[in-house]
Image 1 (cartoon, rainbow, N blue to C red):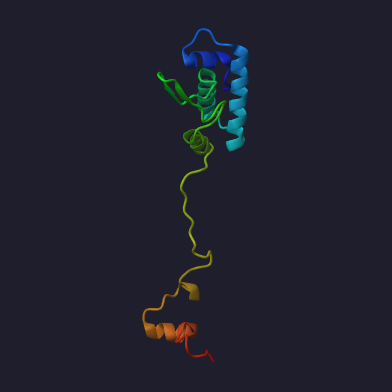
Image 2: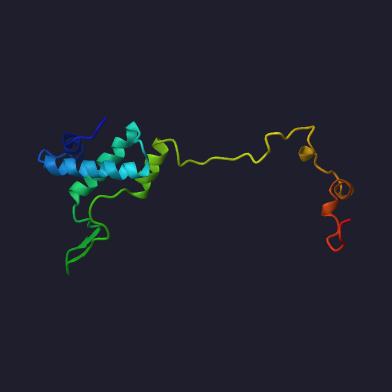
Amino acid sequence: MTVTASDLELYMGSDTINSSRADLLIAQATLLCESVVTPLPAAADVVIISAAARAYSNPQGVTAESVGPYNVQRPWAGIYLTKAERAALRRMAGSGGAFSVDPTPAKAGPGNAWAQVPLSPLDIETQYPFFGDWDQPTP
């Protein structure tokens, strides 16, 4: 699904939306999303419409406002993706999750020396002499 100006209008609950401005913001939101993951997953429309609606409804990027004496903060103007939206895009694309790596060599097994674990300090001294006394030179 591709996000359209009419989708943005419905999302925002407005009957009077500037379709040219909406199309521009949707195109910019799409480019931002593509900078996080490419190709975009089908579910990325959720993030695209959210970012476009945020920019459409608050073009100045105002995050705080007081009435008297008047005070306003504008840390970011324009269109942007939140940290949660970037993470959602990565999850939708199948990346960004936790994973594990098995460090065991592929050839490890019962017959390999690698898999034989010494059971006592004597085994360590006889099988692995380089783990001996560090003060004495090895023969």
